[in-house]
Image (tube, rainbow, N blue to C red):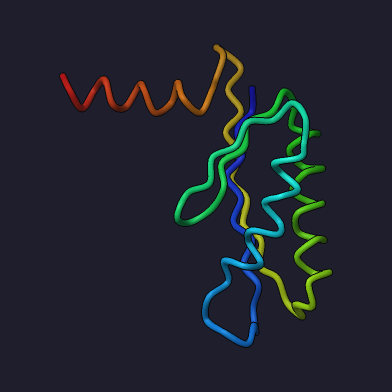
Length: 102
C-alpha cells in the first residue's frame, strides 16, 4: 500500500499563519473514501490502495489551494511504495518504536 507525504504551502498570504488554508485543503482528504491520513506539524501523510489514488488526491489538493485566492502554491510530495511486503503508516512507526525500545 503506497504512502505519500504531502506538504502544500501557500506563498504570499496576508498573514504568516497558513493553518486556515491547510484546514480547507485537508477537508478534501477527509472526504476521500479509501484513504487513511495523519496530519503532522509539517505535512500530511496519506495511505491509499494505489499510486493513482494518491496522485489524483495530490492534484485535487494542490488545485484547491489555488482556488482560495492564493497566487502561488509550493507542493512537495514524497512517496514510499514497497513491493516486497505490506506497507502501512502505523507499521512504519511501530517498526521504529520497537527498535528504539530494544
